[in-house]
Length: 97
Image (cartoon, rainbow, N blue to C red; front, top):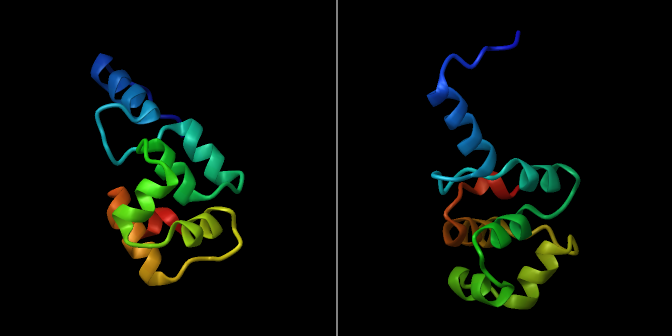
């Protein structure tokens, strides 16, 4: 069933949701598609937040080489590391796995 957008506020809310504007937790559709295609969710969120690899590593308290391995798929990342990364990225851990 397709829901009809009833008014301008519905259409504006949909545009904000797709672009990520106005909601720090919303991931723009283009970035969501990158994750669906297999790109590292950690990398996508890091770039979305405007952080470099070293900056995120420092903020999360993990080593930059370990973060790089997680982003490149060489290591899955421990639950502890993913929790720290999620906190630093201001997302739920579920968004990263």
